[in-house]
Structure formats: C-alpha cells, structure tokens
Image (cartoon, rainbow, N blue to C red; front, side, top):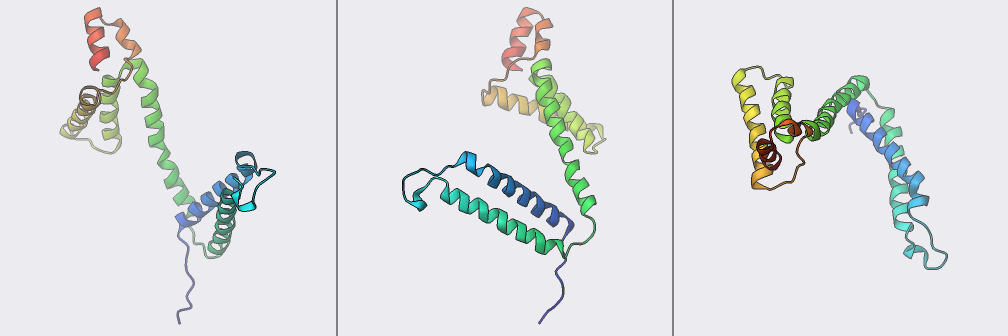
Length: 171
C-alpha cells in the first residue's frame, strides 16, 4: 500500500480557487435568476435543478480546495504571474479592436500581425514579412471571400473620393 502524500501543483490551487469563487458567485445570484413558483411540484420548479447543480459545484469545489490546500507546494505566486502574462494578449486585441474603426481594417491588421510577430520574438526580416503577408491574407479572406462587412476606418475620410470608396469597400 502506497502512503505517500499527493503534492498539489501550483496552478491546481489557483484553478480550484477560481472555480470555487465562480461557483460561489453563481450560488449568490441564483435567487434572482431562477425562482420558485407558489404552486407546482418541488422537482418541477424552475430553480430546483440549477440550484442543486450550483450548490453541488460550490460544495464540492470548496471541499476540493480544502483537501488540496493541505498538500500544496510552493510556486503559486509564480504560476499566478504566468497566468496574468497571458492577459497581455487580451490588451493587444483590445487595442486592435479600438484601432480598426479609426485607422481601417487593412492597415491595422498588417501592423498588428507584424507587431505581434515581433513581440513573439521573431526578428528576421523574412519572418516579419511572412507575418505581414499573413495579415494581408486575413484581410483578403474576410473581406473578399467571406464578404464580412467591416466598417471603414475614419482615416479613409482624408483620401480622395475614388480611393476612399475603394478602401472602404475592399479594405
């Protein structure tokens, strides 16, 4: 019989804690989202099955957190920092979403694919040109082949009429 203690990985505690907090939040909102009707069978009430499942999520998530917390190992702070670093790319995406209506889909896509390639550590000119080409292909596929309607950038207003219409329709 093996009696060694199971060590908890640093990311495991963070995930279990996030799950527990999320399920506790859902449990706190249950009264407003699903209600009991004055008449009807108990198991036919709209709030019964969501309530049972969310209560179970919270209970078992809390028990899991308690049992794993006793066997934790160091490094949770470093793991949390790694998780937070992923939010950088959310910020990149939000800047992109904010920039497209102002500067246009084509220029922003070309700039951001190249800048993200550079950010990921690619420094060779040929690789960055491939990233720019990938951005050009993304614009071509979405605007031309798929026909996705993306509003033209405000910067297009400064172009001559014929070029402005062409850029709004195609890029």
